Image 1: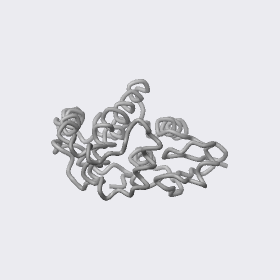
Image 2 (image 1 turned 180 degrees about the vertical axis):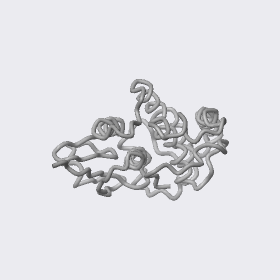
Image 3 (image 1 turned 135 degrees about the vertical axis):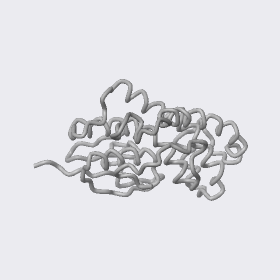
Image 4 (image 1 turned 120 degrees about the vertical axis):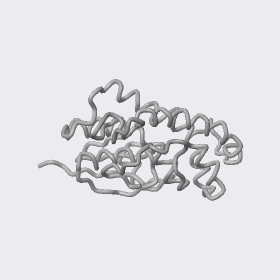
Length: 211
């Protein structure tokens, strides 16, 4: 008997959104366990052996940490419809989405909503990334710089969509769409603004999207 999928996440987590999209596109049934967006996480930490990041996937006695690992396992267990046609390039695109594109997006969000963020959350993120002080005033001052960086990354998506295609690789969603939409979704969900300057970018609602 196949074990059910238990997904530990919180709804505003951008990396959780990637996995939720894969669930939706593949029509995978899953159970939701909402976890805190900051420490302490008394129910999660014993399960993961100390891993504190989000999300975490549980299937029977197997625990999967890290979004890329979770997506690879879902592709292995649920090969239809196939999302990953070129594994090497797909994983590289995931790193682009999770690192440089994400790092350009974060200051745009917290530079704007920073004053509304609880101090406990700020301290939690500073403990998680001690080399990066959570200074929303500095982020706000740097918005023009990061806005240009965001435009550069989003422009790559816009260029791919300008011929009118529904998805980045054609008529059906693929892992490239999951990686590509991450920061567009995060910016839109957090600030309720249309991602700039990409008017074409992701006018679709991928199956499983929470926005």
